[in-house]
Length: 361
Image 1 (spheres, rainbow, N blue to C red):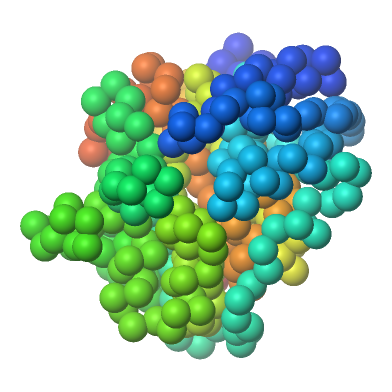
Image 2 (image 1 turned 180 degrees about the vertical axis):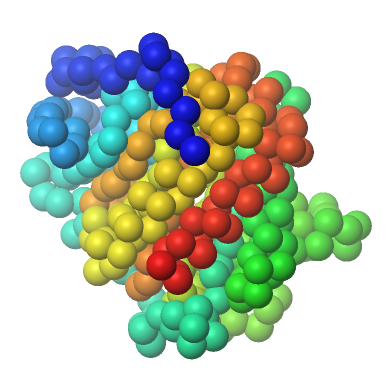
């Protein structure tokens, strides 16, 4: 069922000047959890150039940063800085069928500078071959070496925390998949009980790195990266590779004071064609289900891709997508919806239906 809502979604025309302005504003503030550092601009990170190219098929945003971007985080993790830039451009870009981010460092492609997989894997097993859908709820408690204490990766926003909302939706999705006789695992502890993990908090609230380590995966899977923030990101796709998963579905929610759903895939991991097909199916099912069963004016932000900016996709040697379901920092309708278990279940059911279409049709 499709719902036509005049005026509910008007595409914007992003310009290089507008995107540049938003990025410069982002560089003037430290990324979340990096408040102990100077702002990127103060630390010497420079925006060397921005190009915006629009075609009927895609909007391409090319961003060239100075080499200081690679060492802004003392641990060498560039993803928080890139996330800050991407979120800052959300309002300039708006809803679009496909937005392709291309990052360069002093003119050289980003993928030349980011970590490469620590372990090789066999080809993905299809579901018919007994393969598993790996459901990866983003974030969770982690040990922050910079400040020497445990904290969640995302802040509390209007009464909820993304780390925990992601787990809720992922757990509903895992249950949906299992009920449909589809093998499914989670990258975080899957039971909502009081069992404490190494942080002292309930294990289900902790980042995937610690659960994957407890499962007995070798150290090269869960211990690749400069700190536990990076190790958590890396461990999820590495675990998918290790178990020959059919696909990785990372569950996230967005920031940037926009609204709606977008789905990400990577353009450099060798699985970009199948990842894009999976992303298209997931995004279509999620938006359609929300519009049909929850909010007819829900915004479809389309697909997003980049050249290695998100390790959860880039490091997976199988189809991998990140579903950014709603905006945590937009009160209505997004944040309100994320308080509602009915909304979370609708999203989980829609993703399960998408997996069935992707795998069997």
